[in-house]
Image (cartoon, rainbow, N blue to C red; front, side):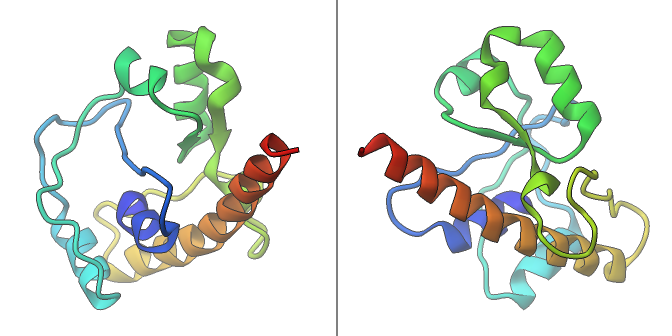
Length: 140
């Protein structure tokens, strides 16, 4: 879901991808995620889950982790990339989500998926501001 939402708001010049620390490689979007994206007019055809690896991290300028546990795992597994890792909710500015995990909506119904999408919307807006400030700092 995060990849689809971020792609839809990223605009030109940003490459967006996703990978998991416990993904089932090749798995399609969940039915609920596809429905949420469809409600918003977002198409993520051809999506297939993949595991994070060295090649993905080496090519990334930033890695946004859904949970503190994911971030901690990546820091242990790939310490050479730890300066790239960020917690998604550190960029959310409402709902008291800063510093918290993005909740996992699996098996909690469509309302839980909608709540996660709203949380991600807020975080993505903050991430976009962060990335713009990073790009501006790089041009100075």
